[in-house]
Length: 193
Image 1: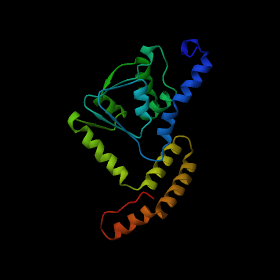
Image 2: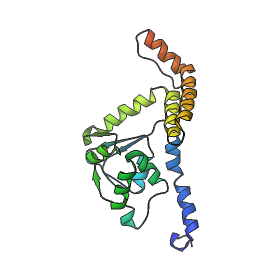
Image 3: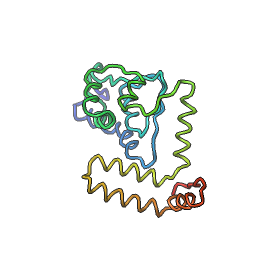
Image 4: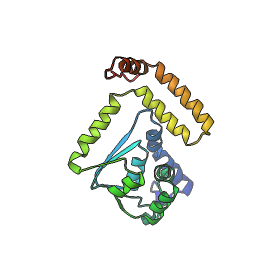
């Protein structure tokens, strides 16, 4: 009875929505998220990567939606996430043709942010993660809120949202520290608040 084949479509859909909460959590998280990828990213793995803010990949990484070839139409949210990264035309091409693309093509499409040789991937990804870990956490959270809001708000509403986020960030410890560091011609010592 627990076999999805014997469930009604509504029950299967409800399970899929429940399983997709990880994508929503990554997308909405107030900290920058990074997918570090070597080798294949297909189906759910690709959807998980598209929910992250950055995709740092090795030269041997490749991408395939795998939905059409598996007789499916995508993970819940995958069309939204893929379209926002590569645009509607490329998302349609990628999902409907279900072709494997290499790291260089993924980078050209906007799916991969940075491509590194296999032996340098971990070190380069660690540098980016360290930058985020040692950076202005409140500013990163505000940037993510602004970018997410820009997908659904009018320009005027985005101006208001960004002004509010900037006011909070500039009044935070890190905002004040950045101003002092600039005046004193030194690197800021961010604390994340």
